[in-house]
Image (cartoon, rainbow, N blue to C red; front, side, top):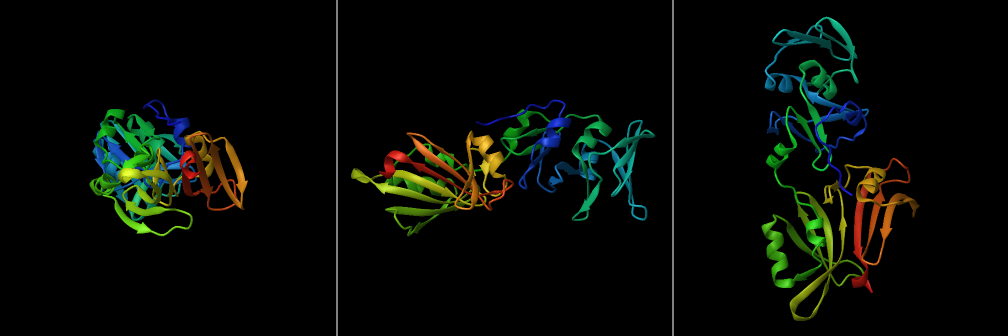
Length: 284
């Protein structure tokens, strides 16, 4: 259900793997928070000055011609904004996408960085992380981000420990009134924006009957609002994909639980609007 890619030759993978808005960036084993990664027409772009200088190269910018020159050891690389070719030691190379300026930062294709500076690049799908001259072991430095599966994987909970546990996770909870649900809490935090549905049991216990997740929530590595329905369905292993109630979505129903991935529109390209997980035995 979950996939992780090693750092190999990634020209094909980086051209086909979606890079999300919350993509992390690790260079030389260091997590970068000052600048980020973007995607333009399916091509991953990275900040050229930051990456080049961290890899030991010098960068020069000509504001009149919008030309950039990168030098490292005996190598010289030059290119211009909005042009899809670059010179590497005098040899013309076609770029996967033309360099652009975004928020006053020059961005270039990630594959170009690998080719021009001779470093390994990779993308880890599970954490949405671009790795430059780094290894999968460096992912351990990423700050922890809550995943809603941590709640629903343990469905029988103690009423007196549930709320303190949520507080320890940095999750705010607010009682909510939801039609047809005995007890509900709205949960808000890093990686979660959801309604948690519960059913009271004897001796102070609660059973989690379902959880409905909205934009920003993570569920088994899928972030609502940052992945298409088709991508989420593939990631979660959902095979029943199509249009239901004028929304494109994906479902999976078994004796244990039902999972519903609901798109924003009827289009097959629809992004995920919400994910609803319902535990069958507890809804009867």
